[in-house]
Each structure stands twice: as structure tokens, then as C-alpha cells.
Image (cartoon, rainbow, N blue to C red):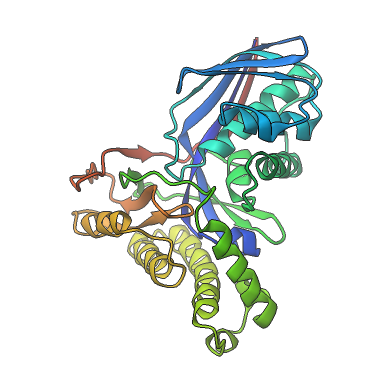
Length: 348
């Protein structure tokens, strides 16, 4: 029996910077997706406890985009990317909410990759280089499955996730630095009540405009702020300004955590939300309202939308005794999450 689990992730700070080669600071969390299966045969046959549906995919998986139901496309694309030879028969379970910005799709990809790798006799990643390679494989699989030009943050934060730590990732060099969370830092994830989807959203348009700005002023994470402000197109100027300033905030946030300065860290989260709202224009009224309510709650240091935006969740930094279960209309679910190991593989 193969049991392969992959955590979700919450990005503490650094959104819409990964695909521009910038800095991000996500952490794997104690909510996860698990594939439990026996290996054998030449088909992947998995049922889902989440939607009571199932997939049956013949190996080799030649047409991932044609698989139904849609969650099966991620698994088929992973199988194609890995060149999987041995089938699986079992089930997929998850404690992760779907469409909340907590990387449920990346968790499914990584859990599937671990299970398919184990079926073919391959061990789980044992070092950083192997974690990076697994993340790259899953990123390519996501591109093949749904055509979204996402960055590598989601997969890499899961593959490299370490208990008690967030992972500072330079998405240009893929250099990783583990940042320990202070004991007085409580992380909450609160759903806005509005689910999001990257497919068919303005995500790809945001990336295109940021890339156009980079053509004019150079790589945005290190671009000269004066050159950014001199851009004639106001949309390009705003997009570039967000990426540049957000990368600065990520480094400052990591330094604040290392110094146990949660007040400074919270202020940086608020600045990040403002930039995502005004310069990158990926917030929504429900996200903005939820952030305002959280900031008015005793014990909250800071809050911001997390993930790509367009709905989904807010992440908040708070004192351990704070209760952030939401009262805002439509904000129906909250989780206090802990930084967790990103992957588990057990064979029995």
C-alpha cells in the first residue's frame, strides 16, 4: 500500500512575483491531500472522496487535457510528465478547501507524483535538488493540464516545506532559505466566501502586462524604481511597481520574523494587500472587507489576500490567543494553520 501526502500552502507574502523571478515566502500547512493506493497494472484508477467521482486513465497518459472529471487532468499530466509505467488503484482524500488559494491543485500534483514514483520504485526526494526537480515536474504538469502559466512557488513550497518554518524562495535562482516562525506568531487563513479560478480569470493578463513592463525596464525584482515610475502606460507602471515593491517587502518580512518583530511583519502584510489591490488589481470587495474586519480584531498584527487573488482567502498574522473566526457575511470558514512538513510517503 502506498500512502502519499502533500500539504497545501499559504503564501505569507510575495504574490505575483514568482513568475517574474522574484521573492516569495510561503509555508506548507497542516492541511493536505493524500493518495492511498496499491500499485499494479497499466491504469490509474482513483476515486475522490471530495466530489464522489472517479478517474480511470490508461498508461501511458497521452492526452491529459481530455481527462474527465477535471481534477483527473492534473494526475494524468503528472503521469505523462514522469513517464509513469505502473498504475494505481485507490482513493484521493483531502482536508484542503478547493479554490481557496491554498494550492489544492499543486498538492494533488505532488501527492500523485510521489505515489506514481513509488509505484515505479522511486523514493521520495531526499535533498533540496531532488525537491526542486519534483516541483519543476509538477509545474510542467500543471501547465499541460490546464494551460495556466503559473510560477513554481506552489509546488516548490510544498516539496521543500519544513515543519516550523516558512520557505524564502528566490524564484530566479531557486535558492531556498528556511525561515523559522517565532513562537508568538499565529497564522490564520480565512475564506472570503468567494472561490476563485485561475483558468478564465485575469491571471494570464496580469502576467503578460508585467512581462511587457520588464521588457521596457529590465527584470522587475531589481528594476530601478525611477525607471518604473517613468513608464508612460499607467497600467504597466502599476504592475511593475507592485512586483518591485513586493520583492522588497518579502525580504523585509523575513528579516522581521527573524527579529521576532511581529508588528513590523504585520505592517508589511498590510502594505502588500494595498499593493495587490491598487497596483496589481487582483483583490475583490469581499477580500477587502475581510481584511478590514480582521485588522479591527484585537491581537491581529496584519492581514492580506493570499494567492493569486480574484477571490479565495486572506492570511492573517496574529497573537496566539486571538480568535479570528470571521463574522463578515459570506466569510464562512477559518483555519489556524501551522507550518508543516510538505510531503510524506509511506509504504506498507
